Image (cartoon, rainbow, N blue to C red; front, side, top):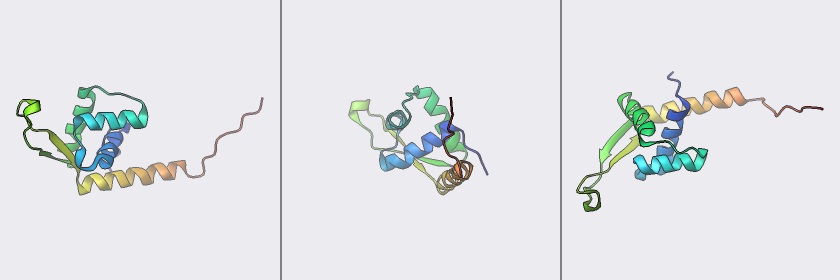
Length: 107
């Protein structure tokens, strides 16, 4: 089983929540919404590329947009492998947190 880094997990979850609107800028914004961290484009792009190369993501191009100088936006979507690795990550984290309760400290 591939163990995701926290950043990879956040990116995959952001893509999951964004559905058909998952491209670089909204992915970054969704992660900031959930974590409070605002990653640079490069910090997001590198793991996106790694996740695509490892088969966890597919990419496709949207329609060219005159506002973007005629360039198309690259969208991301989870593959079956991506869904599976997220499911495994959730199960692992749930198992690790099972039985945890906040410690009570006495003065």
